Image 1: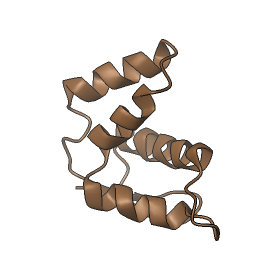
Image 2 (image 1 turned 180 degrees about the vertical axis):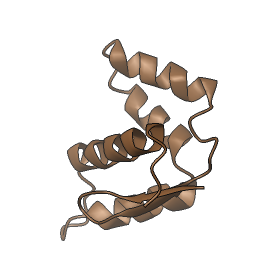
Image 3 (image 1 turned 45 degrees about the vertical axis):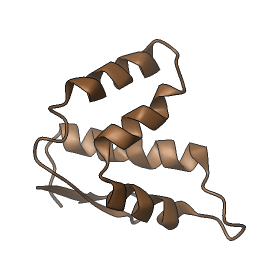
Length: 88
């Protein structure tokens, strides 16, 4: 189990093999080629539903909105830490 905490304080957990997913690789490639819509697919493939809901609640504003920019920043941190195999 990979675990960590983002700079905003969100504690996350992923299965050890979360990154060993060809469909995740495809979504990341789509993002790299400019398809921003693939970000949603990437998040859905990377985070289990419970983790995704917790993250959205963590960054939800007082008005009830979930900032796309903050969501992408948080997931980027999780992805980077996961690739490094960090456990914290």
